[in-house]
Length: 160
Image 1 (cartoon, rainbow, N blue to C red):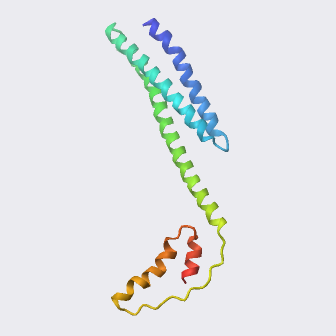
Image 2: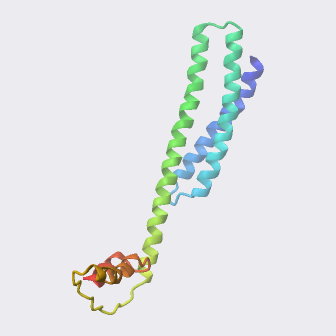
């Protein structure tokens, strides 16, 4: 059991350092998403190694007929590390999701600001009510509606 505790100590230290490093990266104003992802992957590896040693230690405690109180103390300490890992998994997932949405919004802002064309006024055909004329009538609006290079506000102005 002493050998397992000896192996566990540096793993717990490494896990705590990785958590602290991840916290520092996230607290920076422009969050470096590559660094977050890299450090989080390292944290997952450290957590897996730590859980492997922790599980072996708990098994050894059961086999050596330790007291219930000693087992509970070890188990609660181990659960603390497992809970930290779950908290960080959710936190990093939310950060990545937020960043992905932010990049998507930034991309749309860039594309919309780059196209400020003055479009000519179109004289639309009136729908006669005949079914044969519907496709021609519909297509004149469809082309503008499906054009990704035209901003939604410009589309509205164009079609009104």
